[in-house]
Image 1 (spheres, rainbow, N blue to C red):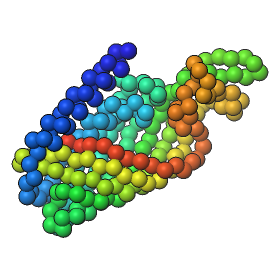
Image 2 (cartoon, rainbow, N blue to C red; image 1 turned 60 degrees about the vertical axis):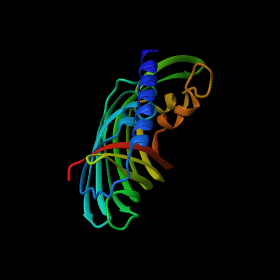
Image 3 (cartoon, one colour; image 1 turned 90 degrees about the horizontal axis):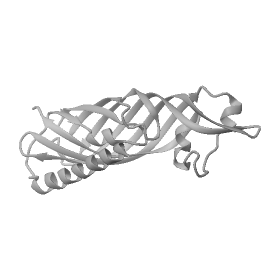
Image 4 (cartoon, rainbow, N blue to C red; image 1 turned 90 degrees about the vertical axis):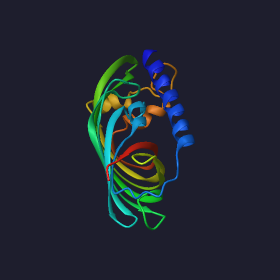
Length: 222
């Protein structure tokens, strides 16, 4: 209950901040050669697990830049994944549509690598015997995403970026359950595992569509 209250307050505050920044933003003819960023919504990711993410973007030439973001997981939410730990890295090449500056609308090709360990808690039934068990999982993810976004200057030193994208992700994961326990996991029943968590507990090697959306807050260094 406390986590839900904190999350609700965080999202409301973030929404008001976004509206204020959007209303007060000014279009400025600024070329952003070096930027550092943070991703505030990553702290409220109840599906993948909360993470702290810091990034940087550097102009290469004219309207082309290289961006990279790294992060580590923190385990204060425990909404779907229990005690998530690990790291991620997301490099990208960005092409801005204004032809001259690192600002405004862009398209980008982004790669992501993620390594994560976490626990799940499920109901398991074997030979009509039903019990609860918490077990460990390990997962690595590779993904490639084509993104569209916009980088907007807020005054001379601050920036707001929002983006969305679609791509493909390759997931390899395993758990410490034996095969009989994996087959006995109860899903989709009231009081058991929610259907939306089924992908999180899948093991083996799989390929899925990948969707990205978010915002970043930035500081212009140069």
